[in-house]
Length: 406
Image (cartoon, rainbow, N blue to C red):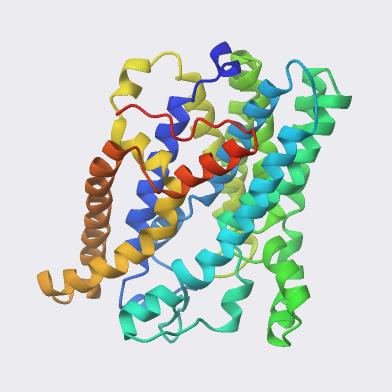
């Protein structure tokens, strides 16, 4: 794994991110188009709905992934001289992610659903395509977090932590110990947001916008910094181990840590009523289980990086999804809404059943696969990643985002 100190992309992580994005497209297109979603008992939802809601929430793996690759990149650039400039670039990227978060939440992204009355709070693009008129979402939509906002604040807040860690704590084992303890402490104490959450609701209802904005990033669903800052610290720890080629530590420390979180989360989830729409103890244990599950996935991907190079090179489609993942994430609602209109002419009433919605989700993945097949021939020209590389290149920050096998 010592090649991670070089300037190569980590293909196994690209493949994992591409697979996660495919699952997001599939389940977003399925869940958010089910016309009878209001008939589900969300106090005790069926197991299939629980599984679908879990499979749709892959933002956690992107949070860990982001910190893994940035930790490796910053460690490599600090080999000869540790200066803050490269770390500052990452923080600037975090600020850009905050802007993109609002662009997604208000204009391009998915929507909130009033599960009781089956009334979706549509974003601008979705409302325009469905109702043929320009319509902005309700004001509560401005105070909804996202995986992008959590990635953003992890980059902004944790990148200086990495700089201080590299500067003042030279012993690797001490670094890993501090990070591991911090991760465990944040995850254990994250149940506190259950009692704090009413403060967020009151701030939104009373239109205290500053407080509501703060709480939307820190404690509100679906990706609050408490506990998802621990996901960022996890990515930092795994990134440092991977950069230093500590395969043994990944096996003997990271993998058992992931297993521990899985067992802890799963054991707790079985003790509480299932829920998918509010912060409670089920959600608390669910985030612990997800963290453990994602640790196992990412560490396994890193450990197989050197062994399965031939297999990885054949997974071009997954790498296409990975390389322009942010562009796809921003546009997948728009393409889904456009395809939705067409699909009603092909299969009338498909949105009345779960199976019909799952088929629609699969067709959305197929549509994006066809788009990427032709787009990659042009080097993903005009994608958000394309302009991202151009912009940061002018600032002196080199990137491998657009390096791909045609």
